[in-house]
Amino acid sequence: MSNNLPADARKGVNLAETSIHKESPFVESDGLLLYKDGYKTPEFLSSSFCIHLFAERVIVDHYVLLFPDSETLTDYAKALISYNAKITEGPGKWPDDFCPEQNLLPEDASMYFLSALMPSGMILVLLAPNAPDEQIASLFQEQGFNTVHHVAILVDDIYTAAEVWQKKGFIPLSLTPQEDDSLCQWFFRNWAGQIIELICRQGMSKETFSCENIAGLRLSELAA
Ligand SMILES: [Fe+2]
Image (cartoon, rainbow, N blue to C red; front, side):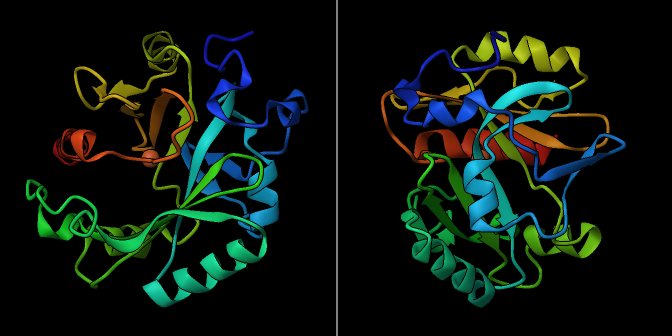
């Protein structure tokens, strides 16, 4: 088994599903990932978390989807709830509504944010701009709504996984992972600008960020 895959089901993902290789929702184009048209449905994404990514078999911890505004995002969230997803973070203005004591991030790094735990155990993160001058708005204006803001890969050993991805040309955006009691996270970017996140979980927590990790992660991403 690849060192890039969690060894057991203790992370809360239904690994019975992962014995079968699922089709990826992504198409790769010169180092960048794009969602395939029609593949961003709750049904498809919930079941397709064990995929090949840059020729590596991975378990996706969370997919990130972009929306033009909070209303469109909310409509999609309603579809998720109909699909028996559970809203686990948000909705709200990130990071202000979640980590009000943090003011290290520039104002244009804000976004409207919601995450949902899918029946399979994987997570969908939904992002939309609060205002037209936010970075998230620039991203989809330049690259479209099928752009992959980042994809988070669940790993057991973040340093071993980091070696795998560095050999593929992904460069860490911080010298070390950001780590607290429940989450260990490390962002990487390749030559084309595609960002992936390696994430390691303690216990059964399902958050996709922590206030302790957030400033280091985002500041390193913005500075890179
Ligand atoms: Fe993430």
